[in-house]
Length: 159
Image (cartoon, rainbow, N blue to C red; front, side):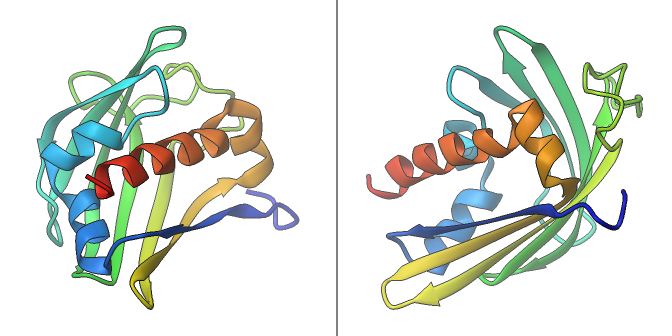
């Protein structure tokens, strides 16, 4: 990525403890309920949310089709921090190019995602950082998708 480009950085305040929000990011049953943009669904072929653990997931979009991702949890520090890779794959888990995954040529084949959970009173500030150009994320809709997913997570946490 060019040095003059700003990487994706989003913060969001949730009305729940860091423990509950962290659990929503690591429990497959919770993730299935919120970890897809509006109108989409998510499937986890595998998920093991622990350091060195892996996941293989697919977000199904009725317009754009399937987006398969595989990754490794590099850091899992309850309830403070998650760091994981996200690599474009096919259904079988084989790495594919951005074009093969239906992404623009500029989209990186691999992204590092870092999530921090900071208590603020009875709330939790979530800071999401991804090693993808923010402008590219806005062009593809990935940036906006985080906000719809965070809205879904807010609903889950309020139940």
